[in-house]
Length: 218
Image 1 (spheres, one colour):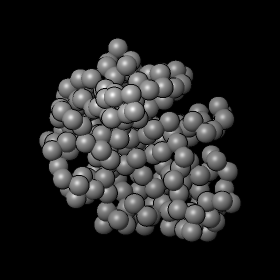
Image 2 (image 1 turned 120 degrees about the vertical axis):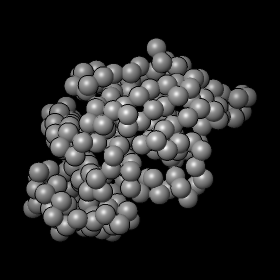
Image 3 (image 1 turned 135 degrees about the vertical axis):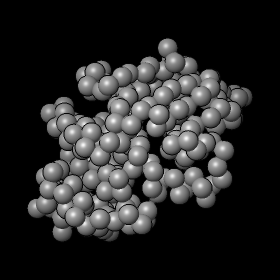
């Protein structure tokens, strides 16, 4: 089992008092498996994704990735996991505007010490980015920018790919094409994919679907 999340709780302080975002969420994800995480706004989807990605820590529970408990790690150890074992695709792309497409693609892999120029070139070609490698993000369409973000994530060959509404800023046709490519490449690398989405159509194309309601699995 690649990922095993057990009884995760997370509460935030608000002006109205404590707010329990996650209340005992558990899930599993095997290698090469794809899982859609759905639910209404405020149900805890993005919070859960951030905890699994080591961007935050839960109040209670375990997040086991390849046998290591991310929830019990210190900041430095979680940062190391984010650099290598986990890749995140965001809705807002989060590309570095001062870097070319080629350098954006290589950025994460270089941080992880896993840059492979041949693999980066293969990703660029498969994602239709080869003609754009010398351009900058502002010169690309939204669909092209999201393809760069996917290439950047997969360039480091992460064991786990987390995607937070990765096609939320794209039109339906472009979203479908981008998801096709992401699923194809994730399958080839053997990575597990956990994707937050509001789209029932996109969720239906994943191996499994998990629905959150008010911080719990519905």
